[in-house]
Image 1 (cartoon, rainbow, N blue to C red):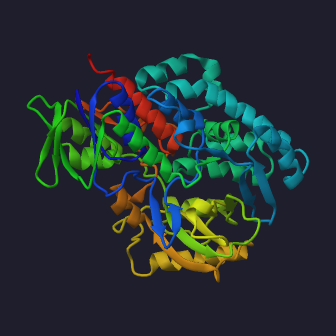
Image 2: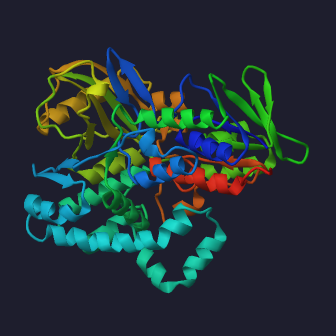
Image 3: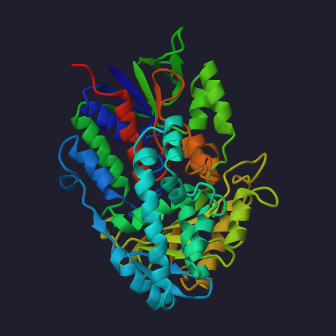
Length: 497
């Protein structure tokens, strides 16, 4: 069959690789000049910045993709496991270097936070492991639908394990009695762009998966993943066309997909189209059928995920001892979530946000010794001039970035006089670069117990159209996007020889 993939993000490239390996003729169309989507790269004056994901978890998912489509990952792309997964600085000044080896975490927690904290976290992780065991196959590695909910509801022990009536914050407080551990757990809700007070307890599987398989980096930057996927696709005979904006996914008289129309007026026929684009864009703008309009109405009822303001800092003389990943917690995490999700008013920038810093010690991404390419990120509301925050308002992004650097200094890491240059990526910039409404990083949030079932399915209601990527099942983040690609490839099936 002729297949067209709209969008060369990781999800689009990964599904294209699988489908090409299965014998299909695959063309990937990308509106940007480069591949990668949200896994973006910015280069300036010899500094190279990852502008999207800065951490790889569950590396076996990426390894399986390469192993089943050609040469193994180890021959294509090096991976480096981090000894310290992340340094956390809490509001009281306590510093925790969280080990990358799960077996070492309890002792590290006891040493940094006090005796008994390791046991608390271990008890929580045991529950999280059981949640993972129940949910990963039916909810992360398979298409999802009503039969999955029915099967789960019949297994009372599994229902009690997952506790769909409980939030992630609520589950945490059942096991974690140190507020710093609750704050640590809350952080994982942001991995899905969600509020821990509303996100389901099932998200406990996120810290379990990260700590079980470790935190990984790609020397040279995570953007190399997208490059490696493109190269694998082209080895399999697939094609990537950049600078090719799709204006419409076309359908025949029966409402079945029959190709795509490009913004330049050309058309490409296809038996199947896979959309690696935000579901709101797909159903709201690219497909014009009654089924698509109904799907657009369903997607509109979901809560958009949070976005972020990123600072790309070229640093001269980085402070010694800066870890690869660091999180500087806000004094009031609840106030942060209230601001981003618009509780008690319109969504608004956070006055004193939690600050995340990725500062790889990697000579391949800097112009020379004594320099650093830092990626700094704070949670932010999506770009929404009418009902929330207008990130294009003059000076807003710059003022917020200044506040972020001041907060870093206040929390013990002052680089204000070491920044050679900085580049800002606001939610509005992200919206324009990736065609993601509002710059919502993960599509819809996981807020609410039904969120997983409201997320758009991989098999769309439009015959011949499939969705892949962070805004569709099973969700955002590199491993889930790769799983999304595996699900879609399975739904399409191999080519008939």
